[in-house]
Image (tube, rainbow, N blue to C red):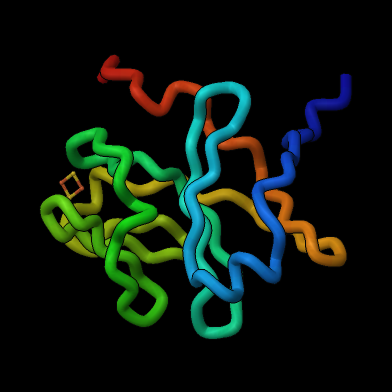
Length: 118
Ligand code: FES
């Protein structure tokens, strides 16, 4: 049996709009949300819900190099790996990005963004 992971990609936004604004929030049909950033010449997509307090505000975060700081309590996450610089036990999911022409596709965000099961 082929167990290869087949991630579903969805169109999140236009590349030109993301370059102009630097950040965008994307709401997927499954209820999940992603925050997209254009910084340092690269596009990053991460979950919009902060794993610290489950607050959907990452798209409003502060960019610091390759990191984003959640605007709520300033936890810092690496945009490429999702690793939390402050507390290694709560990382931010990152999504693979594909750019085709002016379309930005990302892996479909998790649908359980507000799942409080620990
Ligand atoms: S909710 Fe993001 S750091 Fe607390």
